Amino acid sequence: MSDRSSFPNVAVIGAGPAGLMAAETLALQGVKVDVFDAMPSVGRKFLMAGKGGLNLTHSEAMPAFGERFGPEAAWMAPYLAIFGPDQLRQWAGELGVETFVGSSGRVFPAGMKAAPLLRAWLHRLRGLGVTIHVRHRWQGWDADGALTFTATEGTLHWQADATILALGGASWPQLGSDAAWVPWLQQRGVELAVFRPANCGFDLPWSEHFRSRFAGEPVKNIAASCEGPDGRHWQRAGECLISTSGIEGNLIYALAAPLRDSLDASGSATLHMDLLPGRDLAWVSREVAHPRGSRSLSSHLASRLGLKGVKTGLLYECLGKEAILDPARLAAAIKALPLHPVAPRPIAEAISSAGGIRTDELDAQLMLRALPGVFCAGEMLDWEAPTGGYLLTACMATGHSAGRGVLAWLQHRSN
Image 1 (spheres, rainbow, N blue to C red):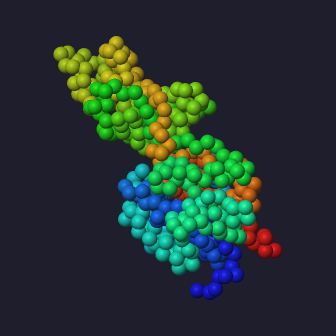
Image 2 (tube, helix red, strand yellow):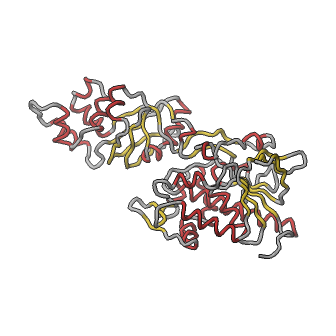
Image 3 (spheres, one colour):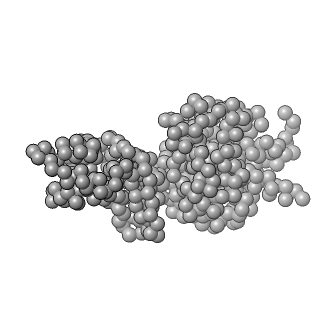
């Protein structure tokens, strides 16, 4: 490898997908890159996310894919246009990791695991000359403008021609995303939105009887809907899980943003659960009203409607005795059972976080307007998306664009 001592030096802080993608984008163009991470090893959240099967991206076509980013869809669009789902799958293939589309449209590596992909990626980065420094916790800048780190050998001061921050949000702090970086940017005049949980479960005041019987039980083949504080109606189908504290799972995560925003805006939210999405209200009403003779209501619901177990338990939990014995009110509840979450689960438990650096604090190349030469990427920016491959794709897309932004900025400075 040629001597790089005269090449521009870029520091990338954060060795998750956004930071590693930024490092690769730069190193492919001959830039000397040093990656710093506070943890003992890189990609910890990436590996944890892939524990049950790494969901790399989603096969959903544009523009529907981009619409999953809600209010920030237009802002995210140019970055996804450069490095979106197709480019991500091609990139994985170049690392020797083939991908496939699952029945839900989600895209997975052929082996389902994150570790082989990360190993191949790190091998490529080493071959490109990228140096990775673990156990280096960023502490902002010193009086001379040098990056400051605490490391096992003491305090390190590092001068770089440009810096990319890819420090993550505030979810899963045990894996490194602890938002400890917030004060260092606030002190430099960068405005941030308060971090909030995203893709999270919600607390519900279950009775002890319901909790003891059904905590840990999945509720399958249902649909759910809610309204956000802006009046927009949200609806998704799937399944969820009853927890000791409330409700969680992919269906709930998909509706987490409007539920959380409603709780923030008015202190209340309502989630309507359709326990029989394949049947209309007229059919349900006829079956509920069918004479049941000496059979119990539970037996009647099981034999006529196929409702049993946790679904029947939810009806008894959420409806009073008077309502559950009224066929019309019971039928309506089967199609739209109202649940009233009281709070999202703590951000430390959330899959991801909303909030962070406001997007208007960045220029189109993801450089902070207040800090020339400092670029940002990944979950530390104020956007959110549901699970299903959207989160990881956006982290890598913004990492790729931050790398491209640094290249353009260095080129402009050298002219």
